[in-house]
Image 1 (cartoon, helix red, strand yellow):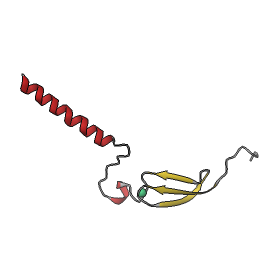
Image 2 (image 1 turned 30 degrees about the vertical axis):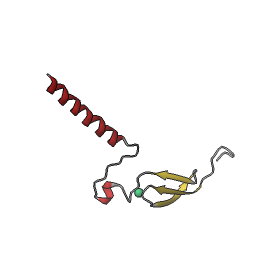
Image 3 (image 1 turned 45 degrees about the vertical axis):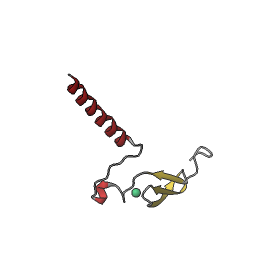
Image 4 (image 1 turned 120 degrees about the vertical axis):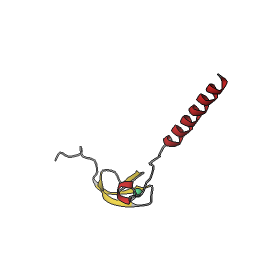
Length: 77
Ligand SMILES: [Zn+2]
């Protein structure tokens, strides 16, 4: 291996939003994740909407608003 071109490779703690931590090795010392094997619906078997940026909420709002508008439009005809 060449010298000085490789980043430091050491212990890394991955912290999940659910509180679970996984220790591994990486060039980074800390990684934050939103979902891990312990809280992923595939492993937990539970239904969970992964909504990190409020996108689901945004979509729902937009969608219900649109339906409302279309309804009102039809009523005005
Ligand atoms: Zn998790």
